[in-house]
Image (cartoon, rainbow, N blue to C red; front, top):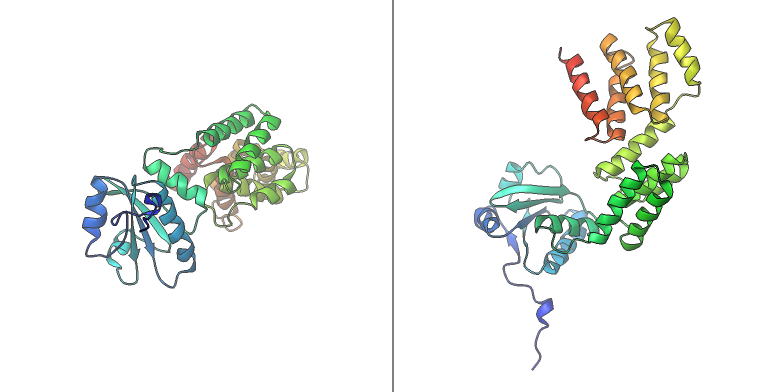
Length: 299
């Protein structure tokens, strides 16, 4: 007689197919006892066929710390509609009867693991990776580009698809003035990445590629002669942003918006959004700039 390896056995209620009729019991009530991941999918969805098995593997690896419920949105549209699921695959995490986290699209295994680790209170979190990422960020702040590159590169040897490390390496290249290498590095991240660090680097590259060829001094001289020369001010803002002076760029762009918000099909307002993204959503530049922009637009 042979026996199944216990490590390969999945408890019968750890991963299950759910329905609108059983959603309250399988997800809402069950999440009051332990976290529940809900995978909204459909049979025709290609990325769902990639994400589903990867999620199941990660849930099994968590050894009972989290459960998973799979919902076919075609057969069970009610709760998908209530949760405003607009594209699939979409994953929600429920704790204590409420959705607390989620993501869309097929993501790499490392991101799935991090998602589950966060949900289960950090069980199994790779502290080495977290510490190296923190070290890399601190080194960048201190302009220690060699130390930052070493830390991010170390993370990538352990987790080649770690998006924060990819973005960190790209930022090192940007700080060195090597935009071409930065672009090649950030291309390692998924094209549809929602990671703020990845989006910030891509916005910084967009600002650099749009920088005018004229010297900053020439543009400043034009503004001194005519403070209402919006084109010169806009070009100066682009030049400042490309050089890393995001606050200076924001000041000039806001001046244009305040004077003529519709100038050049709202080019200044649109450029502001790119600058905010490049600075990072939680940066002082972005927070202060958005507050000032709202004050102008809604005054």
